Amino acid sequence: MSRSQYTFENPVTRYPQVEAPEEQVPEPGHDTQLTPSADHGEETYRGSSRLVGRKALITGGDSGIGAAVAIAFAREGADVAFTYLPEEEDDAQHVRNQVETAGHKAVLIPGDLSHSSFCSQAVSTAVRELGGLDILVNNAGKQLYCTDIVDLPDEQFEQTMRTNVFALFHLTKAAVPHLRPGSTIINTTSVQAYLPSPILLDYATTKAAINGFTKALAAQLAPKGIRVNAVAPGPIWTPLQPSGGQPNEKLAHFGSQTPLGRSGQPAELAPAYVFLASPESSYVAGETLAVTGGMPTP
Ligand code: NAD
Ligand code: MG
Image (cartoon, rainbow, N blue to C red; front, side):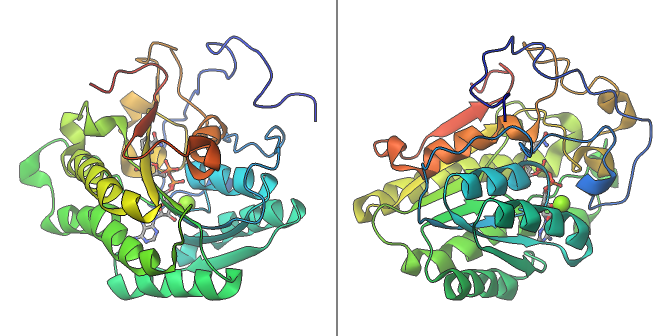
C-alpha cells in the first residue's frame, strides 16, 4: 500500500471533482451502484493499532461514511458490528469482506432504525456477538430534498425525525448501560445544522437536534468517563445524495461551493471518527469536528 491517508498531497486535487450522471435512483442508494464510485479507503486506509481490542457498533455501516468508518476501525484493530437496511445486503457484504480481511470480526445487523425495538435489538445483538461495546457511532441518516414545505409529506417529516433523531435516543439509551469508562459515542451531524439548505428543511432540523443532543449528552456522560462527540461532514459523495438527497442540478457540481472546490470522499471522514474513538482524544467531549472542505460551521 503506497498511497494512504498519510500521503502529502494538494487537498484541492487529491480527488477529482465528482461528475454525477443526471439520474436519480430510489432510496436507499447503493454504493455498489454509485457512479462514479466512492472511495472508502479500501486501497488506502493504513491502520496503526489505534483501536486494538475495541468493540464498535456503527449504524449505516454498509455504505458511504459508515462504510469508511467500519473499514478504518477494523484496520485500527477493532471488531465491528454494523446496521443497515435489509435491501442493502450487497453493500453490507462488501464491508463484511473488508472487515474480515483486516482480521476482525464483522457482525451484520439488518433492520429499520425508525422502530425503537430494532434500535435496542441492534445494541443487544452487538453486545452479545462482540462480547461488549466500547464505541457507538450513530451514523445512519435519511435525507430527501423537497423545495416547498407545502409539498413536504407529513410521513417524510416524521420518518426523517425517527431515523435521524429518535433512533439516536433509542440506540444510545440501550447502549449506555454497557459502556465502561473510556468508551465513546460519536454522532454524525452535518454542515446542514449550521447552514441549512431551504430544500432540506426536515433534514437540517434533525441535524441541529443532533448537535443539541450531542452537547447535552456529553455533559451528562463525561463524569462517567464516556466521551460523546460529533462529526459534521460537508458535501460527501455517497449514495445518500443521488437517491433523492439533492436535485440533479446540485449534483452536477456537488461540493464545488466549498473552499476546497470539490466534494469529499467517505475515506476523508474516517480519520476524524478514529481520532474521536481513540484515547488520543481523551480530553475532547461535546465537540463537533467539521470535515466540510472548509465550509464554515458558525
Ligand atoms: P449512506 O446512504 O451511505 O448512509 C446512510 C445509511 O443510513 C444507509 O446506508 C442506511 O443503511 C441508513 N439508513 C437510512 N435510513 C435507515 C433506517 N430507517 N433504518 C436503518 N438504517 C437506515 O450516506 P452517507 O452520506 O454516508 O450518510 C451517513 C451519515 O452522514 C448520515 O447521517 C448523513 O446525514 C450524514 N451526512 C452525509 C453527508 C453527505 O454529503 N453525504 C453530509 C453530512 C452528513
Ligand atoms: Mg447504504
